[in-house]
Length: 250
Length: 168
View 1 (cartoon, rainbow over the protein chains, first blue to last red):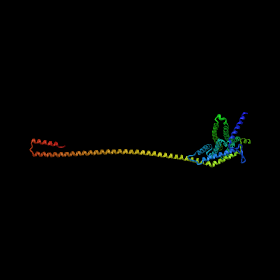
View 2 (view 1 turned 30 degrees about the vertical axis):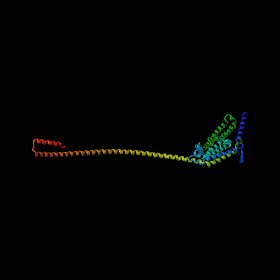
View 3 (view 1 turned 90 degrees about the horizontal axis):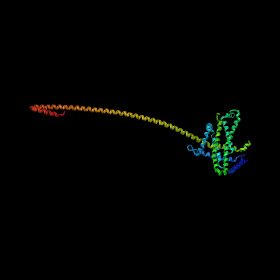
View 4 (view 1 turned 135 degrees about the horizontal axis):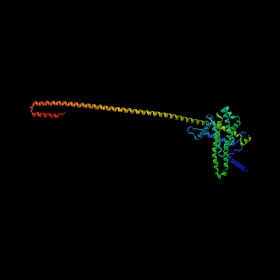
């Protein structure tokens, strides 16, 4: 009884915080765009993030210097080389080079998405399950296509290995990949945002005991770390899945 | 299924997000990605060239060093040879000088001996001449004067005295 009441109270508090934070006036419920219901806030945030990614990468790759790279250029280069190292280690360099653009875009887009939600009143596009599930399904389809492309008919053999009876299990395994990929990212980022809101809502309580904003600031710092880690995990798992289906020998 | 979709809040945003990402992917592929690949490739080539050049230069330096070492060794050998030759020549010359000096000394000695002999002969001849002259003189005196014992005595004394004055 009291637990339920407490739950009610926290829901109320969260709703209040969300309501107070919604200074841009985004509608809480999906709106119809082109005849389909869509989350307007997620879309707008995605566009902003896309613009930021474009701004960042374009300004980093404009006037690239060979001998004395600038700070932005160095950041992009390091990011690229880090991902390239991962891809070349897990795939062979030829396949890795073909996928580098996808991996690089994926990583930088998810990274910016994850970090964007840390700015007050903004929201991570990845804190919406639609985004993460969309990305995960995209990755899933890419993986299947790459498997077919690189291994041709042999690709279907892994569904019935080691026995035909494993087919349902393998299918479940395959389908669980995009789901885990999506919900891992979504859960981490959404939980991070909820906790940010909760900590903000708790300020009236914590201001006298824990120093008010300190908990919030610590959590924001940790969320930056989580943002990097989750973007990295998503990219890394994409590489791993691709390497699984394209490997010549099992 | 509908319940799951409802519970998760899935809707057309999913498709829109995939579309958004594909748009971003295409944009990055066209505008950004080639630059990154190009610059990294250029840098890799640059570094490779530098390393190759450094290796080449190192090899050249090593070759040069070997050549210098060889040259130096050759120069040392030559110097040693020259010194040996010079020493030999010096010894030769010294011996020659000593030989020449000895020969000269012998020659001078011979000449001196000849001189001495000649002088001696000359002196003997002169003495003989004077003896003869004195004899003639004595004979003359004996002939021209009356010879007494006193005179004879006096003559002999005189003769001896003269003879004693003679250089011989």
